[in-house]
Amino acid sequence: MADSAKNVSQQTEDRLSRVAESVRKKFDRITAGGFTDKIKNGRFADQVDHGVDQGRREARQRKQDGPER
Image (cartoon, rainbow, N blue to C red):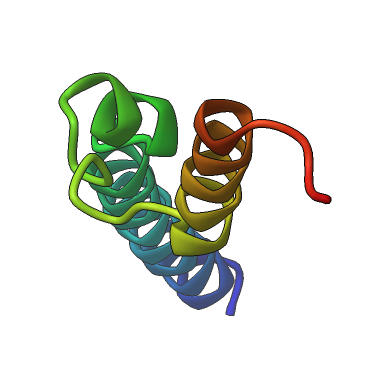
């Protein structure tokens, strides 16, 4: 019986080691393409805040046109 318990224990330890390694690999794969890396590489460069751009255009236009009468 003691040998059987040792075998079960060893098999369980082996399985847990494989699961831990699998989790480490998946974690590394997920964190490899971090959010900051995507920003640095310009992934979101084409997504602009149009509200800010419109506000700047309107302010520029008001400045060029002069004060309202």
